[in-house]
Image (tube, rainbow, N blue to C red; front, side):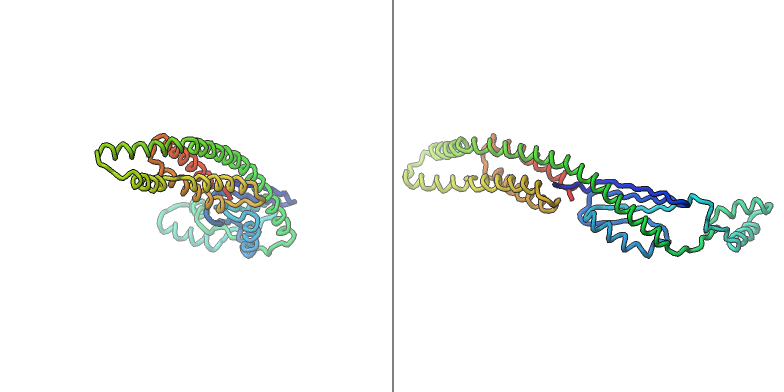
Length: 285
């Protein structure tokens, strides 16, 4: 079962005096690109939190946010009196005004509030880790559901490619006959006497260059392999990407050898379907 790299997970825990909120968003990326926003109190735990997220989500552009909101009466913030008075003194040199007016302006300036650094509460951190696990479960469920949509789309497009390949196979004898007739007519127009056996040998050699039997067999095998990989236990977008490259290589070779307008039209349709697969492939984990 494949997974999408697009997802969202959120978990909220209400403690007696704090509200803890964890949000995780992910988009597609070639590798793991994790951006973390956490309170300074928990900076020393950032690497541990990152490892937990990386172990669960593996790949993608991920935004992780941890919010801790004080909902009780307690607060560790207080006015930084020294800084405020310095602001008021400097403002007094610039403009005239009463102290209340200067205070009001000064309080809008940076660093006017100071927060005493709190030690990490191990019980609170345990709650955070549990909340993170719940948010990761949510985002993985989201990714799996998105993956089901992608899988259904891939299966439908693989079926279309197989149908187009079947039409190519049905058309192939007529294509070779048309090429042969075209060559015979070209030689006849030259009004040149040729050795029949020699001409037949050259014709066979020429037609072999346009033979697409191997390409048809390999393309069908690649399509079957793609379909079976979709059903594997692990979501492997990179592997599916490699298979789609091989599918494209065979389609291109058939197109270059076709030399027959109706078959080239089918090849264009095959390329269009494959391009849509590749676009969606960018979202697969």
